Image (cartoon, rainbow, N blue to C red; front, top):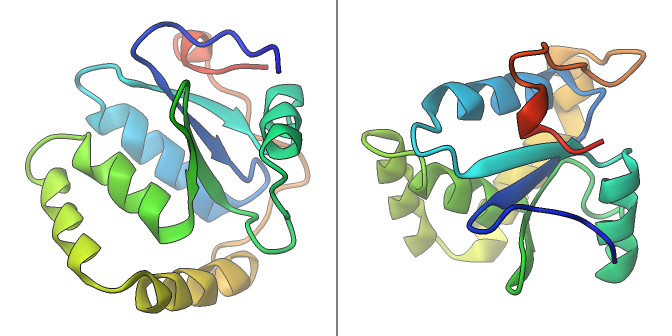
Amino acid sequence: MNINIPEGKKLILFDGVCNLCNNSVQYVIKHDTKNQFMFTALQSEAGKQIIDAYHIDTNQVDSILLYTPNKGVVYKSSAALKIATHLGFPQNLIGVFFIVPPFIRNWVYDYIAKNRYKWYGKQETCWIPTPELKSKFLE
């Protein structure tokens, strides 16, 4: 796997055509005051490399992954909660939901993920970041 992520950064992989996912990425960018996260679409070359390297079934996980070099990938509700815990106060308080068993968290997550296109819509192509945000994205 040949993905160049700067030291100390985490990579969020998201569904590039999902409006909910794109809005979530923009939310993270706005609240990532420590500049810890980079982003790429699941549909991107980097996204495909990570999916292949970790043998991820995109029929089961198709909306968000958090990749940390030397640590691997977390997905679904665990990824969303881990991301939130790195955003600072008050967003980091969402981490309290780690006490909820994963099978319950992931059931809620899967329900939202299954309906996200119906509720929030879908784009024809992946969202393209502005020139100011381009450095936060992998191609």
